[in-house]
Image 1: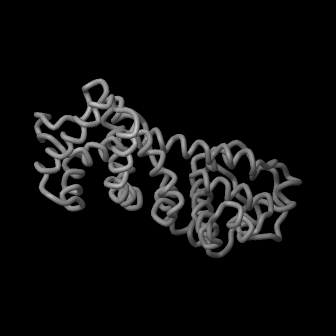
Image 2 (image 1 turned 90 degrees about the vertical axis):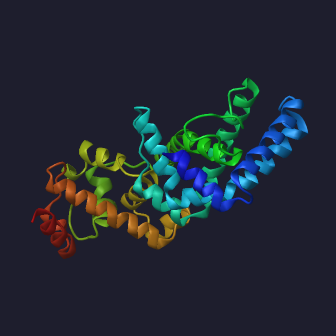
Image 3 (image 1 turned 180 degrees about the vertical axis):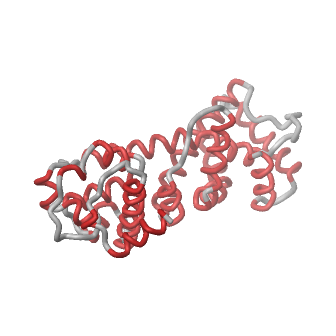
Length: 279
């Protein structure tokens, strides 16, 4: 359960024993309540709590544990929630992505915390559950887990919309042969029939992470890897890696009969990958 995992992490990251932290936190909340949970005292409280929690939350985003715990929490609630594998890689490699999602998550968590404290049903030093009381830092990190789904969905949706607005393209024979599917599949000397492009391709693409969708769309439009990297704030290597993974997805879909890809477009390497999958 996430409570045990978070408490153990807090014990490692924070100074003093847990009982002392809970006593100190109770004093902080009492003082905050005396001022109606508003004004300068609230601002100072939020800044201090953010500073305590930020290293833990950022580390959990980087390691993927925050996303994992959030998905487990959603599953227990009967909600469908998944974090794209490409996004997990992005959180691991991009400090900008980590900072962006961290700010969103902690803002949602802080709003939830203050609302609960005002109503008297938020954190309590006298909690008597099966695991006893947690310090305020542990409780806030738990709120971050609960709020991650909301923050991630908003973040991912904005990226999808951005990609669709800026990277729209026309899947026609003319557009395909002008730049597209040949570059996507790693060949440029084959005339592509329109059957390659269809609903199935769109569905397969929509199943991928938003940045992968943008990379693929820009490749089909004829942008080079360096140009795509510049526009999406990625490295050229990251662009190539996303294309390689998407090609693997496409050829697996072709093996399953979801999409038709002419044999002439199969490079020797891709043919070997297909043969291995079929073995």
